Image (cartoon, rainbow, N blue to C red; front, side, top):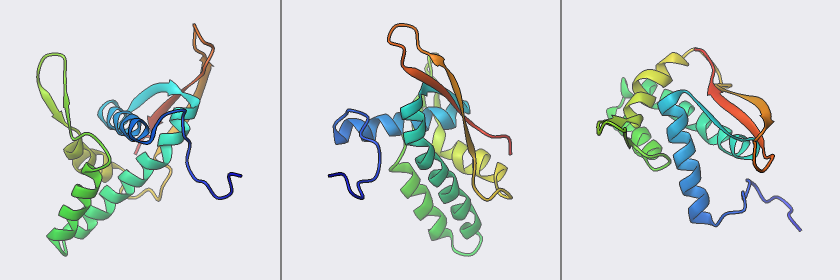
Length: 137
């Protein structure tokens, strides 16, 4: 029985699933949109929204107590890959982008930071595809 078992397994082991989610969330924050399967998009949507909310709360708390802002950054760093190396060799700080660009953009929005568009089936295996993107702030 599956009573009260939360989350999607995505046919992967626990470590593989954790790495997959970190990779997809990092790509979403880096590019603003990603194309993936519907199941993966639905699986990481909640994690992406929680990270944005965490970043918003961390920014709001930095004015009162800087240690709370640092704590929020460390929690977020544990759930995504902070540095992304581009093809030209430069590195992008995704955590900095989350806290300095993405979170302030949604300061007045109370949730619903992502949107899923269903695309057609993927050529090759007919897996249902989806576009997961950050909504305009």
